[in-house]
Length: 399
Image 1: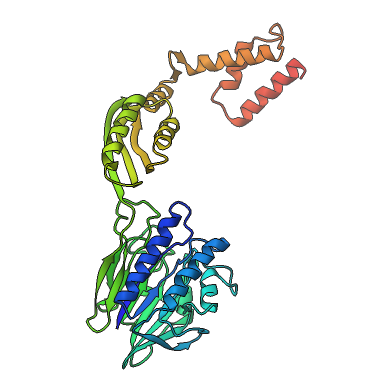
Image 2 (image 1 turned 180 degrees about the vertical axis):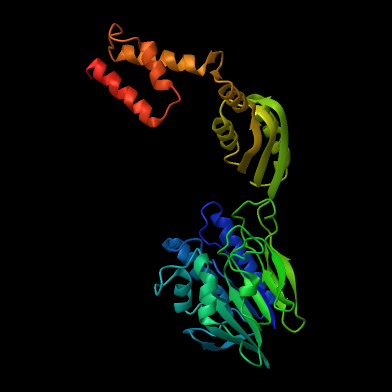
């Protein structure tokens, strides 16, 4: 059986809403031409509660697909209700999951008979004499996923090709949270493991060489430097092999621009030159600029806003200035280390501000030497000593 794996469509994604729908449709239409069935490991929608027009997009998309001819059909569902035999099988992702026992956007499509929601259930597909069983593990909180797997203990069905379909973060790919699921946590004895959620393509092996495939998303969302090619997986159960089918998507171009002690105008002009060159021949591309090196910038946010405003109609622009060291900040830090701001020592500046504040409050300088009072309050003493000094000063001043 040839199975298309199409993941993370994110219908209704605000930044690239048209891209999300058009690329989802492109991938699923291609899947219909090439595959006997489709698996969707989560995040058909981008929101837990999509707007009605976004739900309508999903209904139109899957209604059209449900009317087309498919090589396989659903012959059995154990553990869930099925309202169609069309071989489009899905689970909810983290963007769709709602409170327990509450309907989510995916379950609405299933109730309408447009696909099968196989959350915590087995769905069996058949083509000729071959059967494929899919067990779905819909997205749950990362902190609960490992324990939930131990509780439900998913097991493959005998005598068929078994697929474990899930939507979680894998620790081996993103090792920054101890709560993330490990590959060893996955239930044993399935023939293929398919994961959604992560938006880049990965292939790993688990449990004595079985494939774990993550197809990535069909639309750009995170703008990672490695998030470029978009598409889906075509898996052949007979050959136990697959290929990545690329779909057309908005160009995503990345450029690193280096500076040496540059000022605002130098950075602005250099960025404009590089962006104009990158954008040639592309219709409203996504361009990500990394700024690197050193600079003397008066206002970072204003500089970035100028660039984004200039290209607001022609380019989706993202600017990363995390690797651009601001020399003016370094200078300020150095001055603080030297206990001065500009040419004036910090202590002297503080004294001047203190005196001005006393004048504003109408302080009678004949009552006590204000310089002595400042010295008392600014001494590096314990909190208790300072409180005592303040109390004595207030008593002396009768305030």
